[in-house]
Length: 355
Length: 231
Image (tube, rainbow over all chains, first blue to last red; front, side):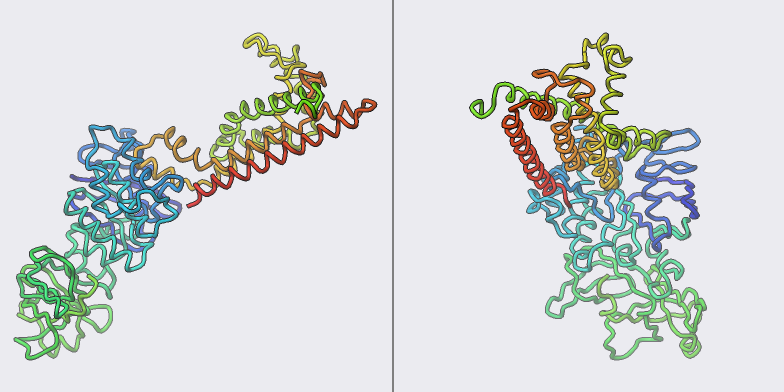
């Protein structure tokens, strides 16, 4: 599936000017509040008309101002999970779920009610009214409702933003399952580094109504301007090798070395993503001695960039993947760090919690 | 009941109920459309339409009745049109009483429905459209059910107004027993008649009973609807 967008839209003083092409998997629209992410999603869904430009989904033109084409939202077959759920208050959970399904011709339907209910774990909620649901439950029903309309593509606009940490942790696995099991193309809007690092394949960084960076999640997040200095970091993919519940850790395999992270509930052999923030990375020359730091990755310095303050960004190549360390200028001088030098990147296991 | 009321009084009671029911049911679809236009429409003349709808609320009922007589009397332009096209005569018939009652209750009905339509979160309608619902289905499955409390309130208000309508009705269709003499007209006529006091009082009690029943009923339904509709 490909989604090609080239549109302009004036919204008061704000100009949205987006050119974007995405492939299959999860594409994250990432950026600060007010950067134009939601407006872009509304344009894709057909809730807003562009002033100029076109949107094409898999060869199907959804809007083209040149040719005066505008497919209304009801005919686009694009599922939309809103930030606030927007369940119909006068319908039961079951009727909410089946709303889009009733409107979908039999031949176009995929998935079944039972399958979606199982996937989202909402079987016990079926007879309830939306007002009797918790925030997390509402959001799961909203996802199910969008899926049961058998969409060609799913838009999710900060579906977890209104939820607390625990509810987020409750829903993220469902979205992951959706990504992995359904192979449904998803456009995921978020300003949360954690969510995007965990879910996205491709990231489009949006700022001031424009796409300022586009690429694989690891590449975009290794750039300071993408996520702000404090949150800059690398996203590494590693395979679960062993679970050590007694020690409360999960052991992972990565081309650059073994990784130890606080226990995550994922079966052995599965691929997981680990986000390592640049500020949590320590650089060492040679093999360090006995340290409490669990993670040691062998790498090579690619480049050294002066930061805005006293800090320096050191870009590494660890097992073919980019990684970023943030150290002081003093450390660079003392260790005589230069591009090409072999170093060991050290990361405390506990710094990896929550990713 | 016939022990308590004379046949004439009973006739007035049934006529009142018939006139009010017909007035309310016939004006309901128009009320919904006009309320929708006023709540959602962005067109030239919207303020004028709003003003015209509200006129019967602020004008003296006699004036409304007289205007109806001019327009819907047998020689009036609209009256002639309806008679020729549908064979429907309003002048001095119960249908005219229903028309007068409908017109007088219309502003109240439109106001209540309009308010409830305006309070609907349009984002829910957007959500419905992303699920494949076209405009008509969105209206029937989301807008209309969510406006139900207002529609019900509008129906009750309009019905109550129709039951109490006097000025416009008596001006337009006079006070003919068995045809246009509703409870208020009957009470008025009885008060003018010697020894009519007892009958007038009986009809007054009936009138109070119907009004109370309508209020209780509307409260009951409003609560049921509210329980189903609040998120």
